[in-house]
Length: 362
Ligand SMILES: Nc1nc2c(ncn2[C@@H]2O[C@H](COP(=O)(O)OP(=O)(O)OP(=O)(O)O)[C@@H](O)[C@H]2O)c(=O)[nH]1
Ligand SMILES: [Mg+2]
Image (cartoon, rainbow, N blue to C red; front, side, top):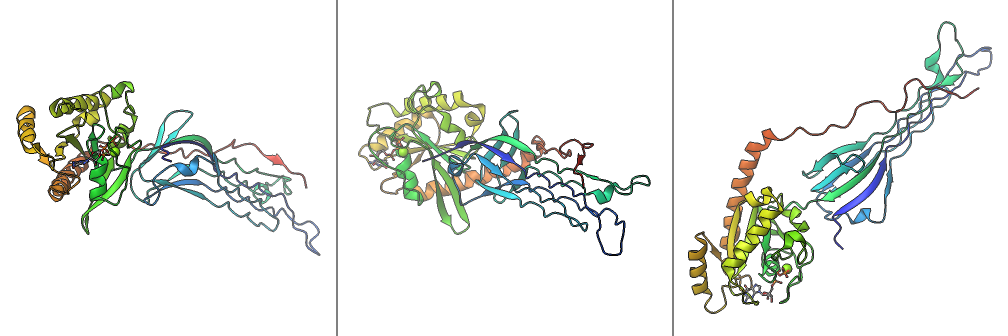
């Protein structure tokens, strides 16, 4: 199952209550206050990891809580702080506040960590409340409640390259030839129902993460076929491979297919429309493919790379070319990153009401 959205509730641990206590020692008739502070509640963190690639863990569990702080104790002993809760999510997870719709964090880097719900502060014990007139305070502070949030998590796979094309163009065949990914391959349309990531290793230090996507058909932006919502997975890829079948089973014209897919990408978003595209003609092992390719080059007036995903012809060249394009794009993106909108910072405000005291009695 491929889960790319989830809704959950998170809560930081509550702070432990401060303690009302008095020294009771032999030969000390009127011991002063000695109630310790409550421990702080644990925070809820999210961390991006590489070894998880779905939000499936969240489908069966909606409530995620960090541990509460323990109560303060006599002899000025502070209660134990609650343990933090660290929730692992795939790299590329966007964390939204479900109630406000605000994007709290976009976890793109591996091991990137963010505190999403703070634990409440522990209350102060009565030892803090002596005044010249009040030598034996019988009140302490209650712990503050932990911050709670309803969240919507959304996974946008982060691939360097996204494969787009009509059903049957050979996208899955291609990714299974250049990576360990093994999506289903068949001669009927819509074999691939959800995006699949594969990692192509050009050499030890040159790797490309490639996303195989379901096929697109005319009207996908209006929901035809499998629709186009999965395109959001490639909004963040650096490069698109537009895979063209030189001899489509359905007898359609490759040039027309090219423009149809372009139209769907343009309708989906400006970001996708503007993404660098490498046009790749597949199934070049078929007879007469060369003539069709020449014609296609004339018609589109654009460079087209020729491959056969089945025989492997042209694939090394394809990967080298992609590597170069991805690096070029990465440099460009980085030089633009200064213009990025500032990150949303989580509130530092103290939680709960400051002046509320709980009379715990003796
Ligand atoms: N002759 C030839 N056939 C190919 C080549 N690449 C893919 N095919 C065949 O084309 C058909 C469709 O291949 P897939 O890889 O499933 O196509 P897809 O683009 O992933 O299709 P969807 O998942 O339905 O969008 C299969 O029968 C493949 O064997 C190729 O290079 N040459
Ligand atoms: Mg497929």
